[in-house]
Image (cartoon, rainbow, N blue to C red; front, side):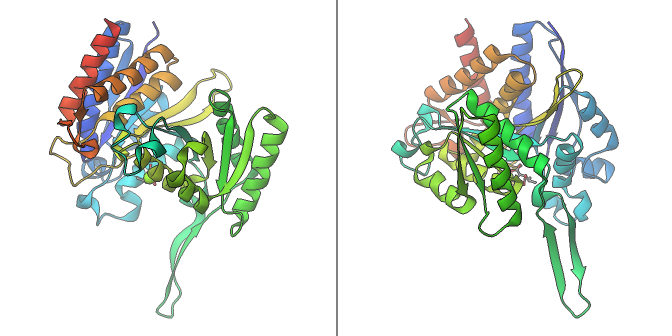
Length: 371
Ligand code: IPM
Ligand code: MG
């Protein structure tokens, strides 16, 4: 069995707590697949890296990220680092990883586990059985476009500038990722932009339409303005299969989608680069969609499911261990069926557990399902 290299970057706040859970799950699969299947390295990122090195990620950590098979990322940020220089803020570490590893395709699946249909703020019939996938462009758009600055206009006024910019190839490749994934699911892609006010949206719409028509005649590709898409996600989310959108809209729409699943603590993500022309391997990073939750950090109350499911996505997309990934998804569902609930997904009649309790419930379900 080949060795799979994983770089663990727990980060800040609950990042370290949920990464400890992921470690236990990795150890479980390591034992199952043969000790040494996973080779782990670890480093600091975000505020922790700022404290250690004065920057949000060290060059040594970047080198490790470049060389590994997959990065498992926790979460970064917190009030402690509110005052640090903009370029050294914790989020800069995450954005540098995405950009330098060229992880342009961000997959954010929103699945409503049956046991959690009542945990959402939306009605059961709206979310029950939900299984949608948001494909977010991750290395372009307003996150990285230049100029990006605050300009002093010299008359007592300043001007804050961000630049939304997309080239044809960036739109083509993310639409292809969405369409390829749709082929394995419901064969429907909704492309979302704001072509009614943004030139980048006009181009996005044009390119998406062409790629869909010329390369994916078997996929139903439709278009929806991003504001409407946000509204439709809470009105009737089951109309969607795959949603493809730019970096900023994807950031917002995926937070909305998270609430359909019961909690932001449920959403994993995969960020993938292009396949290497020689080896076919993609650079990859897996991270929960949620942040470092400074309000509950240190209390042991964090929901580890998004982190654990992110490792599940690594099994699926980086290591080709599809049966193992399916097993882990089943174990998460089974743990929820037992009534175990962290505070964020707690509801009437549930057994309230902390990070450790939920992790233990998932490990127990793994044992039972594989017995
Ligand atoms: C996300 C986060 C990040 C983003 C932050 C932490 C920079 O919100 O992954 O959705 O805006 O992309
Ligand atoms: Mg976000």
